[in-house]
Image 1 (tube, each protein chain N blue to C red):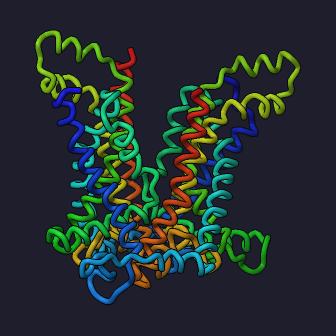
Image 2 (image 1 turned 180 degrees about the vertical axis):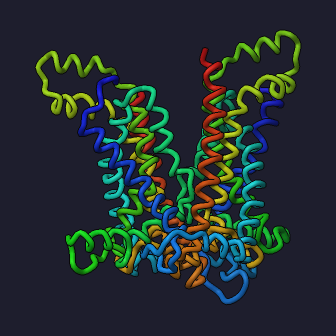
Amino acid sequence: MTNRLSPFLAVMMLLGFVFLYGPIASVIVYSFNASRLVTVWAGFSTHWYGELMHNEQIKTAAAVSFEIAVMAATGALILGTLAGFVLSRYRRFVGRTVFGALITGPLVMPEVITGLSLLLLFVALEQAIGWPQGRGIPTIVIAHITLGMAYVSVVVEARLSSFDRSLEEAALDLGARPAKVFFVITLPLIAPALVAGWLLAFTLSLDDLVIASFTTGPSATTLPMVIFSSVRLGVSPQINALATILLVVVACAVLIAGRLVARTRRPARA
Amino acid sequence: MSWRRYLVALPPYAWLALFFLVPFLIVLKISLADQAMGIPPYTPLLADGTLHASGANYQFLASDSLYARAYLNSIWFAASATLGCLLIGYPLAYAIVRAPSRWRNALLLLVILPFWTSFLIRVYAWIGLLKSNGFINNVLIDIGLVHTPLTLLNNSFSVYVGLIYSYLPYMVLPLYAALEKLDPALLEAAADLGCRPSRAFWRVTVPLSMPGIVAGALLVFIPMCGEFVIPDLLGGPSTLMIGHVLWDEFFTNRDWPLAAAVAVAMLVLLVLPMVFLRRYLTGEERA
């Protein structure tokens, strides 16, 4: 459709964006409030950022979350890429329907069910074979890989199905072995999707409260758990400051990834 | 298919079988056990060579009206919030499609961006806006619209706001994809034949964008039903939802078998019907 934007639609769009961004803007604005009372404006201050830097609990949890997110995103990238490759290239094989249902399962499953079922698996495994001993970072990583690989496979499958197979065929005709074709031709061509998939899995892991709460043990507390328990006690300016930092980091990462994907998509179409 | 292909498919397949499929069988198994003191806090299903399975947890779920209420509540909240997402998301998607083409990608990115930022923080932001001495009440009192603060938080209103706000991007994207494909010539034809724009909208645009409406609604409905964070942070005693009940049985009452039974009930009464509905609806569109 190429019709003009009517004033009514323009207003609806503006209201929609105010609805989407108003709450986020309020968090950022109040993070610079000098007052402890979050809702009363008492002048500009970076006091809460300084206080945040001295909060050991939040710093430790942030480090734990970051470590988990890097490992989970990397694992999800490897397994999700393989799964996306299988879904887009192997049209017909024994168990394909089951495979498709399994890979998209974590996308539609309510988080409380995924979390509970994984926890019960870990407990049963520990009873049966003695692994994993207790729960903590490794079990959260496994849970987040399972969730993240579903998202990576969707992104990779979409990229693979829109790409020109003749390049791969040319390399095969020139005598390259399939594995070499994959690493030299296919992988660089789908690199933007891999970057986007990794970032998606990374932010999902960094953000997850429910699944991590089920699959963790006393040894590991992630950032969302600390935020959640402090938010339950009420709004705090320190959380506003932390939220602002997280928002800025994620927004930058997404914009950079968006640029990367957009830049490499154009030549592929031409 | 050659053995090499199976080698590629094996790692993700095996991973999903072990960490997604098997766990559900264990959930099913433990939902038939009883709560016990100890670690792990449930009775073994096989002891002394005999099977100790009981449907007591399911009987309990059926007999206590709390669970049926939470289940119906979840469906009601999710269905209403899905409609709310549609009412806000449709004009938004429609406006983006009609915007000048050089703005379209930027506008679309603006819709997606909040979805990448922390879900927990976006829900948290509404507490500051909605509470009795929060931003919205302060503004309403300052301009003299109300004299005493309105109760906007910890009731069903705040749960609706949280659900619609959190899931709006998921709704806008499929709507945009469907509306973008719509051929403007169809609307021109309707206009040439004397159809008023509002009538053309209802008779041409809406029916043709139905696949997007269905896709968006199916995408947001299940996660909304199982939501825990939103009813916990924004809700109150009257906004009990089934995902929250499962969480409480597990973390507060430490009744793992009952939590497992709630999970199985959710799966059978909620997730599976929606999966079949999706298959039915999307299969029909393809035909």
